[in-house]
Image (cartoon, rainbow, N blue to C red; front, side):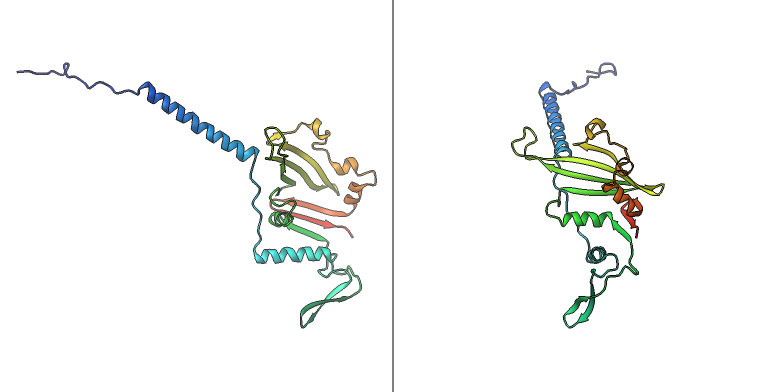
Length: 232
């Protein structure tokens, strides 16, 4: 009679991974990592065009009313014209120019600005605007020529930020920075203009910045909205 004690119990031999299976797993992991890396590079360095921003019909009507008011000089009626009801709708008739009751406030939402960009054939899919507190950011996709090495035919991502505010009775416009494909550009490459108030720097030569500052009553950039009030 054959007996087997606790110490004499035999165990089945362990089944470890063979060298071939280990190499296959390592190769698969490397392949997945490489594909993921290439996908990230494609999405970040060479992004697809931006999706166009579409407004709902009520939003589009609201935007068109704002644009019409700007074209009208602030009172909602084109300068030198006034609408009159007729059988075929509104008909423009001559009228004296007047600023009485005209609003000098300009307000656009971030969505409205991006919708306007989407309506421009030269900018659609290439430029996107972001509004946050005292900051206007623009992301621009710049196409490269096909003969350019490595990047030929691809779109390069450029992002810039501008500080836009109203302080001490004057507008402030300062370059926050510029990055290309996610890499911030040195201040020396940007003409040492980072964080320099352009209105203060160039507003004393009777040029664009001085005229711009003299015509602005206030500026307020906040999350998703830009508001500018003009002087008389």
